[in-house]
Length: 123
Image (cartoon, rainbow, N blue to C red; front, side, top):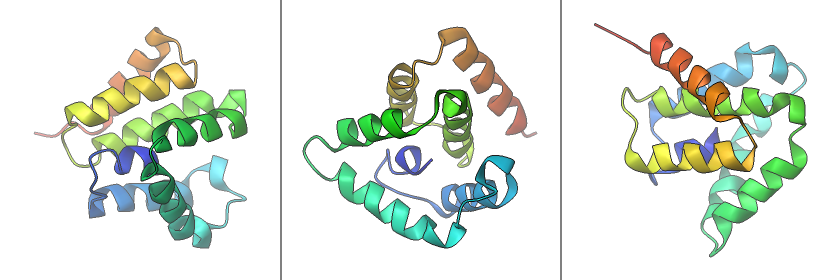
């Protein structure tokens, strides 16, 4: 989630609220210590500032994330991307890279993206 938020080099209040709400509200984070979130976000941003930072973060994510949670991680990344009301080209490209890195099937990713789009639709 932090990776997507930092993709356009600006972590907005909407994105941070979406991340915080997600961590507090979803069962997958039941045993997660939410007080560590700022440090984790800072570490992620720090890693991204290195020359091969994106690859390092993606490799770390793919290595540490259980296969059964990869679709969940992709869905949460899409949620954060949608939090601002529009998704930039940079963020869309990063979602594509993330999808490939996590080996998310294209049709599954499309279904996830469509579900998020429906959740964030407004008049």
